Length: 106
Image (cartoon, rainbow, N blue to C red; front, side, top):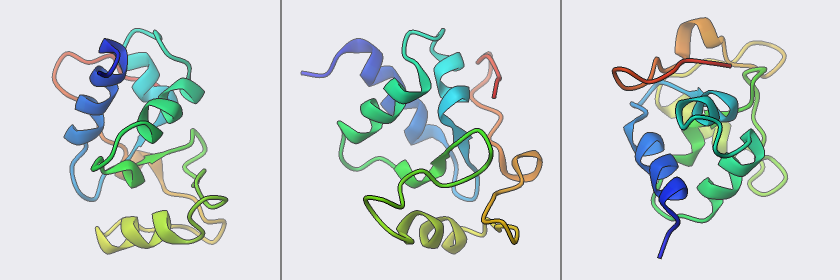
């Protein structure tokens, strides 16, 4: 059985629409910082079937290339997310604003 805080993270990640991204820190803030950004990553890893590829780091970069080289970027590009020359997503353009009433953050 999942912990309630992990279940809350999973619910948020499932809500991120195609073609949008959220950062680990943003999700942490949305759950009242009950998990650190690293903890958000562990929560995502502990579930299957999530659109995990829509969660990126605070710079707009990919943090999963050690485990899945090129996969996260390919999945995001297939949804229309563009990367700059440095391999970063423009968060001003692609950041998901969150569900109504959620706290917004980095």
